[in-house]
Figure 1 (cartoon, rainbow, N blue to C red):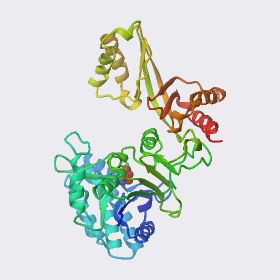
Figure 2: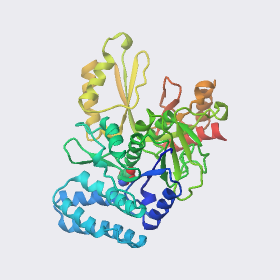
Figure 3: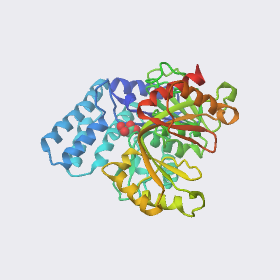
Figure 4: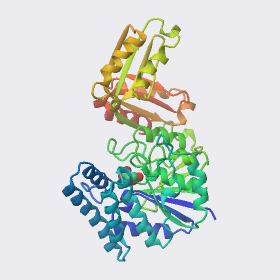
Length: 440
Ligand code: ASP
């Protein structure tokens, strides 16, 4: 029978009643055999995610603040003991919490602490569903550089083949040093994708608190259209650019195996949600643009030099400067005698921008070098764009009519996206203008 892997996010694990709701979803379909969980998330606005509490716990330990450590641990304990009470069964939480306390106090480390939210949530779900708990450290492996080790998929296949059903904690695995290591925040989505690939699932269901992707952020445009289907590529572009329903790296494990992802809503399970598939079956006439997403806080460093185009190694020398500082770039738009680097502001703090500019001056002696700080990048994404003449004309006309000044333009060669850079303050106006042009 076709296997489904269900991953439940933090809001689907937030308290005991929601966990029971998630368990019901699993039990309503016998093909839902593998369950991956996040740590309990926010129960209401202003609440704190268990993962954040665990990071605070680790900070308190590192600062040697015993009082704060105990106070924070108490908050974490209360969350899990309440869940146990709501579920109405002794799930062995006290003993499990005592163990976490002892390990954290013993210096088990930041990633160990952070991972315990999913560990305990998975223990609870395994007891509720009465199926085995399989720890993620048994098969998720990291390289010495801290990236996901490709051996993970074979190990996952082997380990999981021993279980017809299992609950697995998301967000972590085993680091190269033999200690618990976590993914970046929201990484439970990657864990779900690894399990889906390991068991060669027919479908990876990602259960969250929204009924799929919208064409743009509903905080910017009121009730935007939902997207019934996206391709892996479209998803990658949109989630990388800030559509944060799913971790932007979660598609890699499933993409090569062609396993579709379905984004579903734990609080409205009947909704169709969004399917993410290898090749979209959507007719391009249904819409030129699939979605729009934006991300703020980038810096553009632009260099101008006459005859740049014939100077061998120019770009290489510029890239060597940022490479030396361990800085990656997002985009590299270029002209005949100009090139620009678009870099996340995060990489350029504390005087790094000034140093990098000085070093670029020395490396390539540009005629001019200047920066544009605090820009937002807005990606308009859709396979339909390649087949429809005049898409960019419509987009730029909409922006000019909305009075949005475009600082930078970058169109990927796949014609899957058009990225524009605008001032941070123009970000929302830019997204609204593009949405209105293509969806209203
Ligand atoms: N609990 C982790 C976080 O809050 C990972 C996840 O939920 O996917 O980032």
